[in-house]
Length: 231
Image 1 (cartoon, rainbow, N blue to C red):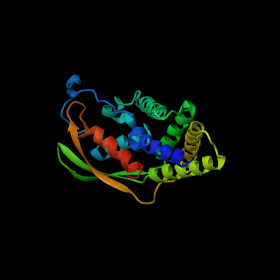
Image 2: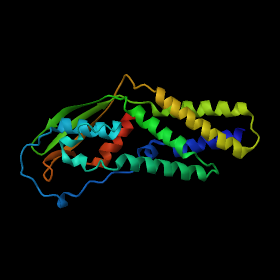
Image 3: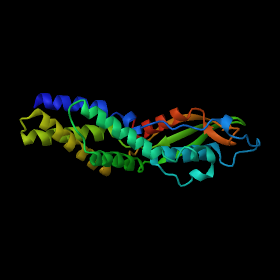
Image 4: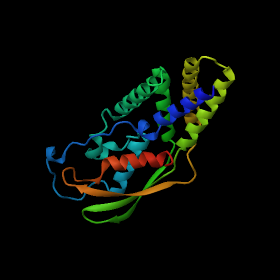
């Protein structure tokens, strides 16, 4: 049973690092493909742009996405793509350990994870701004992803140990099933922190869209997720 627990814990660490939950990176249409607009003041400020983008990235809140076109172009299939990448990575990783996963169960894990992020609170404020660029401070409460994962692994370990299974393959399979159930439960009951994580991001005025956009969209999204899960 000791070896079963050890291999299962290694498996969890390898598979459920945050990057697997983030999924794939979205792509922005090249500015060269978009007709340049007149150089006027953007309708949406850098601070509000950062807030809208952060809400979309972390909370999948698209209520205000139509206020500017830059991010709206990213939205069509992003959530489904992220989920597909997550499930594919989980399935491939577990199969290397001889464990088959229940797609519906891990789909529920992903949904519970995403729902937990909707509980965080995000605020944005201006640090500096000129005609071409701005620095925006983003603050967010967070879900303690590491504690959720660790607690679920410990609970699953104790539950499977009590079953006194003698077949290692059966024990591994059961461990993963029980672990997934505890992840779902822990994500569903998770509450956001009382303290916040904060980082500064540079935004530039995009001439093609005449809107404020992150200097590096991929870094912006990745760091936001890191903040939202307590990194």
